Length: 343
Image 1 (cartoon, rainbow, N blue to C red):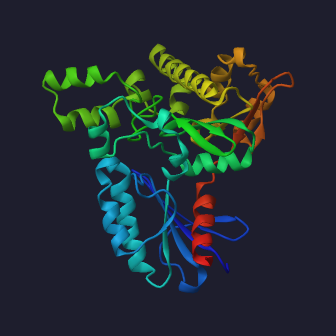
Image 2 (image 1 turned 135 degrees about the vertical axis):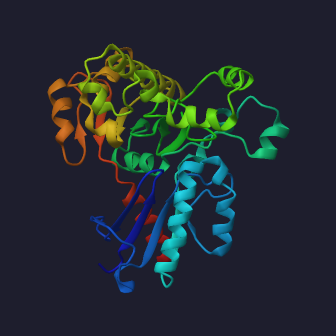
Image 3 (image 1 turned 90 degrees about the vertical axis):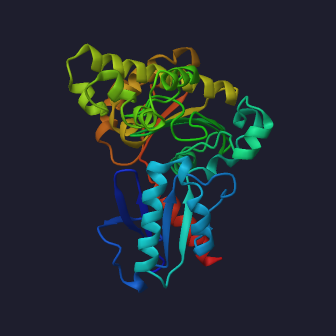
């Protein structure tokens, strides 16, 4: 395991640990108690880097304090991530700890796509702009499918669609926080801000509104049954099917918008839990994109659900590649940590 990196991925409801070898072989572990000589660094996934953390960073006490100021931007993710950093630094004090940020890959988004139509003094005072998320996953997908005009659909518990030109992010559906964009498992995605003002004026508290948008909306809210695509696909109810159709429609229109940003489309990637494991979602999303030359091979698409690694699922007459990419954020984190340590 010489040169191996322990990767700590703290989500809103889970903590995933793995050791990534120099050859990118990744082995899950169930404890921070690894031998000091077994790893050269510990890499931590941080959802939000704010305006200042735009590349991987070695974590010291000062960096940890600065990260605390970002908790309000993504509390469900940042609280557990910082807890994991404290525990890991205590358990492994003799190796460097590196923060890798989901927002960093999107630092290349131009102002025309990143700026909200709010007054400059408000934007500057509060650091309000489109930051984008899932950058580690999108970076991996862009490396696996290196085409000039790529759209990456990270569809899991959280969902985003990103336009990637020549390996760099130029626009994405998530914004200032991970709430924006397409509907997700329990998160609303984009909602008319007038709706939120209306609910507040109707007596809903800020905390109630937060729970509504983060935990009661998305596929769960639409269906009234579940936020899981797998559950909804096996349900016979109209509401479950409707929830999936809304989701598929929003993802397809987001891809269309990304194609406009890219001035064309060479490939679409589907990744993460839904993107990798739902042939129905992939097929129905792509069926709406025929005007862009997108055609799915039904047999290849169905077979990709159980495929290990990446799979090409475009039909032979498709003008656009369609690739199912196995998400490997841990490898991106480990490479970043190893590079910092070596340098």
